[in-house]
Image 1 (cartoon, rainbow, N blue to C red):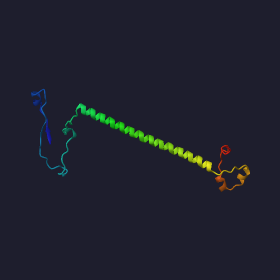
Image 2 (image 1 turned 135 degrees about the horizontal axis):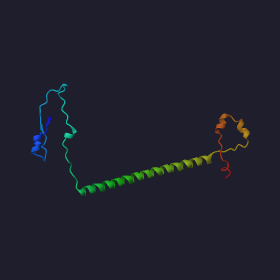
Image 3 (image 1 turned 60 degrees about the vertical axis):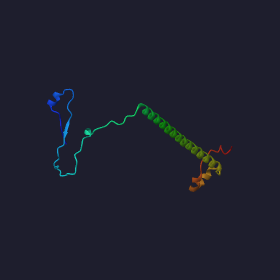
Image 4 (image 1 turned 90 degrees about the vertical axis):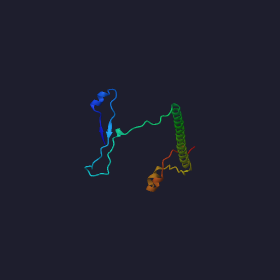
Length: 139
């Protein structure tokens, strides 16, 4: 497809508006590459663009209000989920704390008063020994 532009004579005759571009279809010959099935590509700028259907002001307002409502609803749902998640975390922390306290209470404690006993113990026995605050035991 070859485009012909307006000549200077045409421009001078009508100074207010330039004449429209005239397009003429010239039959294509055989391409040099030999790929006859390939079509010529049109440039993006040559594509005719149409303006879409425009909404009235009232319709736009309704759409905006609807969008606001949906966004607010989604925000509230997200906040609620986040709050539930935080409550679960807090509950889990409390449960772990309680479990730790209960396990400490249920332990069988034997106070070693003689430090020489520790020196005589074997490695396996030493692994089971843990230091604790005995002030809690006296209560």
